[in-house]
Amino acid sequence: MPPAEARAAFRAGRRVPTAGFSAGYAQANLLCLPRADAYDFLVFAQRNPKSCPVLEVTEPGAVAAPTFDGDLRTDLPAYRVYRHGELVEERTDVTDLWRADLVSFLIGCSFTFEAALLADEVPVRHVEDGGNVPMYRTSRACRSAGALSGPLVVSMRPIPAEQVADAVRITSRYPAVHGAPVHVGAPEQLGITDLAVPDFGDPVGIRPGEVPVFWACGVTPQAAVMQSAPDFAIGHAPGHMAITDARDAQFQVP
Amino acid sequence: MPPAEARAAFRAGRRVPTAGFSAGYAQANLLCLPRADAYDFLVFAQRNPKSCPVLEVTEPGAVAAPTFDGDLRTDLPAYRVYRHGELVEERTDVTDLWRADLVSFLIGCSFTFEAALLADEVPVRHVEDGGNVPMYRTSRACRSAGALSGPLVVSMRPIPAEQVADAVRITSRYPAVHGAPVHVGAPEQLGITDLAVPDFGDPVGIRPGEVPVFWACGVTPQAAVMQSAPDFAIGHAPGHMAITDARDAQFQVP
Image 1 (tube, each protein chain N blue to C red):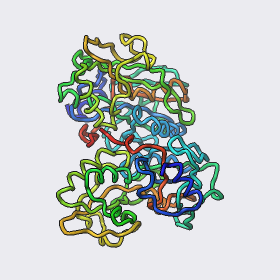
Image 2 (image 1 turned 45 degrees about the horizontal axis):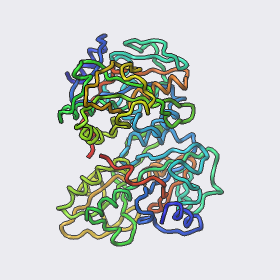
Image 3 (image 1 turned 30 degrees about the horizontal axis):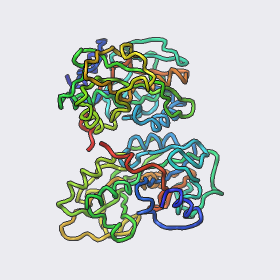
Image 4 (image 1 turned 90 degrees about the horizontal axis):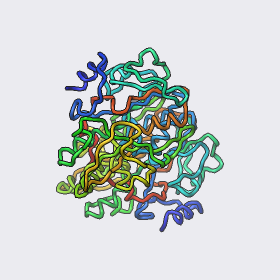
């Protein structure tokens, strides 16, 4: 399904996680903030590039961008609305909440490197399960910027021990979509006490001989919003991403 | 010479291009702008990541940063001062021009990948010559952001034809310091009419069988300052970089 078609389906009200949609095209995390808060977020993103790799910044009020030829208010399957740091609503259309001063940030998503993992036969459990990737708030603080601070959020994929090096090598080629893992094994060092209870997404099983591998996650900006409590923010619902017109291959180095 | 020692020498007044200083440590382009202009620059950098890879953003007024344990007002060998887009002065100390609202941006520098080129015996002509890399304003416009617009500036290295692929492969592993070339051969397509007359730095000879290879250059932000004319800005003098405490190796992927 090409990106324009997927976006049209979501605009028409289809509400579904986007994993596996529009293969070959990059999916992105969304964060919309008033212009008054946007500088702090850009500095926050620069200081935390593994969790917040910014792919696009719109003009204030704009609902499209060169890499997103759609309508950011309607073309994601689901949104989360925050007021003063509280998640107040989840909905499929934010048109009536839109403001002329809202700046939208599209932030790289690890779905891009999952295709590369699968192409080398590195298993991706939540894709096998047909679910959402498990995500965890960690005990690690991001570097703060102005009024914005918050914990690092990670996604986790169980990888067979003999393929951990492959998973590192492959994902490190995609720095604009979180890149190499931030942690391999030892979840307790990240303050994660129970892998079976993720903070976002669905739990996955870890089989004997598999190691939990952790990547920085694009939900980190929303965790910063919850901790720092700007007046107003909109994000995507975890796993319900913006499907862009940018090709995954564009983000591969070398 | 460790970074702290090099910075002390420059602080004491030594005025010399920094190529070859503090091997293994990243050098950086500097741009200082009033906070009121800093948002536009961060968006400009996000939209032009090959020429403006931001490594660090300081707090307003700050003269140091986690990756620069020195004094940004004195520890570069030379600075350029701009008022309303005009280069009004070049000097070795900007302490008396400093303002509490100045935000400093440290921007990746291609000197980092030159060490990797040399390690694989890809020649780097201006290093052989002991001069500054030749840099050219191109006819290509950067993507603009708010009040900031300007041409892409490139650096050029002549590479033997049989090593061009190596040069691409090696430099593409360093996206945070300009990464892969933006152009290989055909300078006229970039609007460069005479390679012997660079806009910044020193000309270098191109030998038979060599191809001019062009990388996005960290002088691009200063070209944007000259075109867009913010009230006040400070940059490094081309080739006279900020020597940081960050290791070159930190910027290598995969």
